[in-house]
Length: 328
Image: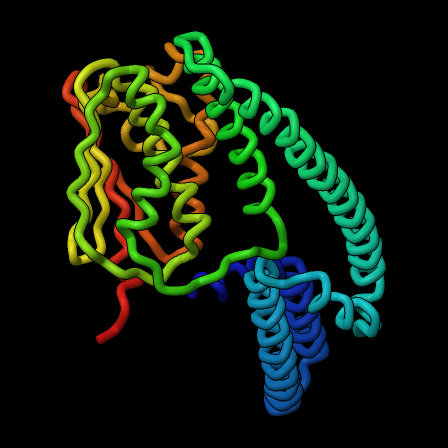
């Protein structure tokens, strides 16, 4: 009904013009005192022809409206054949669309070229900076002092930031390097924990592992990145107490800390890109990218990640890998 009302509103001028013509037609017959039959027959014929015309016109209008509704899902590739051979009455519209498609193609190509250049630059930069990081690690490994341990911890943090840059670039790439196979979850967790052992010792934080022998289908490298990011966040905001990592046979891995916690108003947005929250703003090094990357990676791996927190009591992050458990 609404479609019919819209059609009548758009065609009101033509309908008004047709009504005026019919009125003039009838008035002329009446002025010449012609027989009633001579008036009714042509009038009925005109109404029938007009009704057929309106039916076809309304059908075309309906198709056009449907096309406009579907235009959101139309790509340039789908639209190009239409605008190359349009009906004669739509030639002007097709010419305008060809101009728009051409401009869009040029802009798209320019954006892809700029993005490709940016990815290439930062990828090369990230790989090059790993060389001095490795050299500094070798130098610091030759001595054992409080200063060297602190420097090693900061160097490890720099390495994490470099890995974060690479992960961010790879997530936006058209190609991925995911390799899915079966892995023992406890082995992946222990491997990630070993990287943070120096920070646990230096900051005198306890570590409790409650790991079950669970096998999951995942990408070891990317899942390790997620676990490391969650661990890094837990350590960053935990000043006293410790961290507990627990895995269960149903494929759920939890990382719980005794840190400062997250404010309730910040919880809905902790996985948003660039969102640091109230606590994050107190730490000038917080970027708001780590948990966002974890969310993206978990989605690509068919895992789920969630968090619960209480201010002053700590935070628990859960990685749900239940969908990737081997089928019996």
